[in-house]
Image (tube, rainbow, N blue to C red; front, side):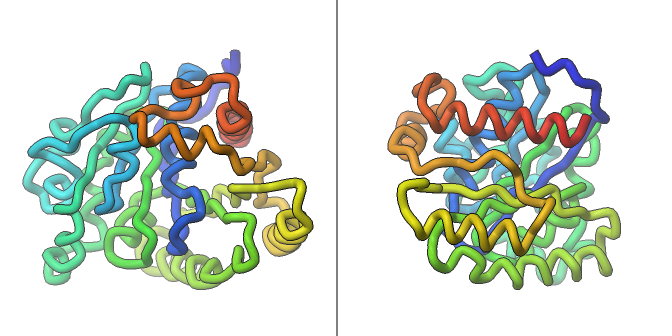
Length: 259
């Protein structure tokens, strides 16, 4: 299944400074489904809330993305396996919140994460970075390290609110730190096809982003909301749910785009 050849080490930042849009849900479940399809995947948790870490049933230890960012531990030593074959995790917890302040005066502060995961990017097919819901130094580090950005957008009234700020940040990163940074695409999340609002938002987002919108749409699904509390990605928690099938389809589409 899905044996296409592609280049190794695609680093993708999953970002949207608006909270509650399915960013971590997308990072965790897309990574898990890519691994299910035989890809070697590293998920990096750069959100001090550590939801990607707990959502995979992992408890952060002494070495996390905080120690990696500050140069106190190599990424290889902080990375841990998960219950998903082929999916590894660089965990995070609340300690990471201090990094924004502690790195302010640090040399190459925007490149700390890029420098730290350079080798790991060569060792994996995909590296996904779960960014915090802000445009601070942690997100800037993620965007500087990334080849591309995947933007989840919730199917709600204020869907595009703040996305302009994110696009402006991406543009600044391109000019100042990472000229090769691209928009991987936009994925609609929490979609309810029974409502006119979801349909209107989908039409608006497609009009705004045109070819950069993923064909796959992530539906509003109770099982997707339940899975993190069990420390499992959706394809383990309920393999036959519509949420699991949606993230499998998103993984297929991402693989095809990078074939």
